[in-house]
Image 1: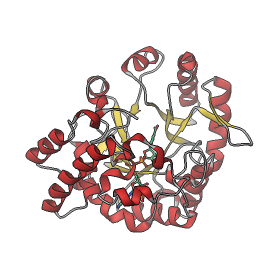
Image 2: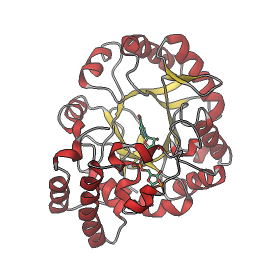
Image 3: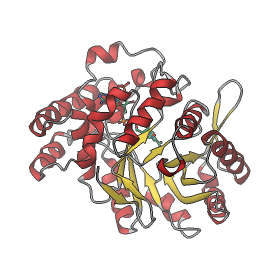
Image 4: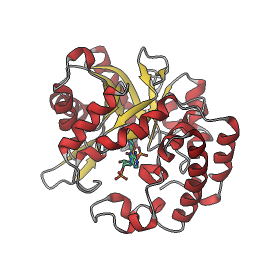
Length: 324
Ligand SMILES: NC(=O)c1ccc[n+]([C@@H]2O[C@H](COP(=O)([O-])OP(=O)(O)OC[C@H]3O[C@@H](n4cnc5c(N)ncnc54)[C@H](OP(=O)(O)O)[C@@H]3O)[C@@H](O)[C@H]2O)c1
């Protein structure tokens, strides 16, 4: 497993981290059935293979993903625990209706609930999940600055922010990291966002590096048709025409390249993201222990320039870079 310093922080992160969205189980943006025992074993398995951090959020499963992470961590001696990254920015009611909020009061309530669910005293990286409501960005960032001074969080980052939004808040406190959607099927951040992060020595954690499963080589048309009703991917544009054909064509190129290295298609898709100089690491979603091995090989995989170029070309078809 290779490691990289996260921007100007003192966090030395493994090149892949554990993504825990699907571990939240069933909710509005769930991934169908997910067993907690599988989630916990998956986390333990990935840590054994050298991964040293995980990413979660209160909203994943309306608190459930953080609870599962808390349970997984409680089985591990404190000295061997991974770094824990989580987020703020969404509230929900008893009916499961989710609303965005970035007020100081809301964030302070959220962090106390997260610390409790995660069973930790400090969060290593606390991120604003989405820049929404946009009018509350300065208030939110000033609150994260206070939380840092109070020692509740070690570092503060943002997710899904544009350059303009980062420019707005950075005078309040420098931004430690950005979490953007970045993969062979989502390359739009290459134009402005990643160069901005590179120029400002920010850490960058790419999310959905395998396009939420599309680039693993295991996602066929037949499997998409059979996805459970409560798997959000069923309705996602990337998993439906006209984008699906473009995306599956990229997978074909990935399959050819990954076989030359003797690695999974998933690992090659993740390793492609590392070719961008701004990238610190990738957040890789995993659901079952048997998925881990095929993913962690990406942590030490370096693709040849000619293969990166072939993948760049394959992913430049017009529909491939359109956001969802
Ligand atoms: N900040 C944000 O707004 C934001 C948004 C999205 C994600 N994230 C973070 O980024 C993480 C990763 O993103 P993601 O989960 O959307 O997508 P991803 O990492 O691109 O794909 C994850 C999915 O790929 C499939 N998979 C995993 N290993 C596999 C293997 N070995 N073989 C075949 N399929 C495999 C699994 O789903 P199946 O087995 O069901 O196919 C898994 O859930 C999330 O968990 C979350 O922590 C953040």
